[in-house]
Length: 72
Length: 371
Length: 170
Figure 1: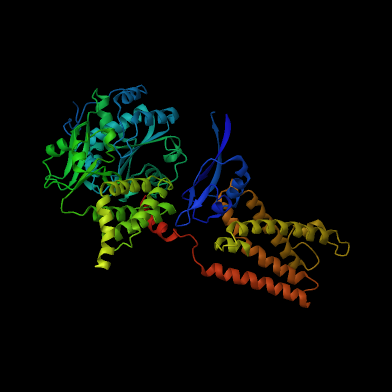
Figure 2: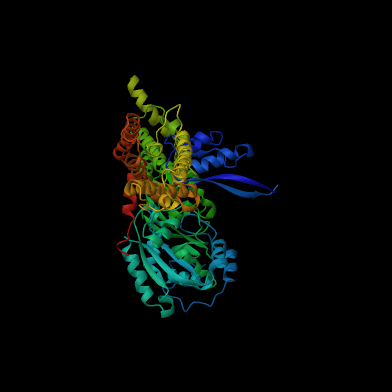
């Protein structure tokens, strides 16, 4: 079993600031109105520090990293 | 064959039931009649496991879907059946409260339920409180109901925590549609849920509620209900979160869980009506009913509705259809509740079934310019 | 000032929003370091006869009681703001925001402290620095006050909420 990290956006708190897409363009892009589309929920290990930064930098704390155990 | 609308106005005292009644519900295969179609036994088990005597039962009679009338009719003509189902749930799930969440404009239904409640015994009556659901589309959604009962505001919330874990008063909560509870009441007396309520709307001789045997085709149901006024151009199965179908296909469709009946509204679009205009009108309604808490839903549905309207009015710039298709891919799953998902599924079915009409409406503007 | 730029969602192709946020956080933490240095050097300086009490209890020093006291107030406000910011995840957004508003108090109080306590206040360079800071913050605050809500959903959300709010009825 290996822990997988998933990006979870609280859609009500999110108000389209866009910092997450700036920091993680590999995983997040913005729609026509500035709200995030998470292209891939699971975060590869090499992007984890940036993902953590996105979580900290979000001005409204709308994005979180959750750990889930994935059975191999 | 046990049917809801033919059943006695009042059965005898409730049978003594325990948690093993849930096995009977699972065996019956009963799914929710509020629109989501979730297996009822699974829902009850989740609440039962966590109840500890604190559970709350919410009887969902909000019926916010504009064309649906079945819940109102059931509450007005068979209130005791609904109450039976609610008190059975309270007994089996060891609930401390039963809340009647009835749409604020459904006056006759509310009066009938309260009158029936006064005829019940004291231990049952003492469990019950009444709440008036605001008359907006999303007010009947599970999280919106719970939010309303906790905070007085009927907006949906993010899914966490799940209702069966923490809902009303932070207690494990069961939110169940009134028709589902009525079926429960019949199962408890040895019946099997073999029927379902649908509301026929649009170009039919007798619009209104019809009770049909599960598995009846739409064609037979329509015949049973008095027939259509003219051969329809298309059939909308499942109300505003449902899907459009070609009449030939719809006529054969058996009315059961696989049919994705949603809230049970079946609409018949008259031959003279324009399906693109009708779709645009429904999209404008659904966009206006967004609770405006999530950007993708509020802006996405509004953009989709505006795009459909431009196409319907023959004032499209020729790129609206491709925009619609892109947004249809991008919008679902990015709201806190399922409102944008339902609206997009409805629109997808329109784009599929009325592809030709949408294309010709979009092209009409360009043709007039070159003429 | 960077905080105001954050809430106003300022950005350009060469200035991403995470730069504003990152700078704001780093400069704020640097400020705390320099502020601590300032307080420590002021207290241990044999010339000033200030004890630790004067640095931590507002308006308890004999030297320029009022103006120095303002500095202590400003410092302690800043401490609350920085600590809550570091614990933002635990506190939740609403509680954090309520305390963060105190920056609008902490900054001017700090400036007043500098003007009132400083021995070089009236020298040209000090006046120039002070004036420039006040101008920068003043302009930023003006924009903040005149920009209204920065949330594109604010009006629509409030209007829907009103429509389904039955709190005074219950």
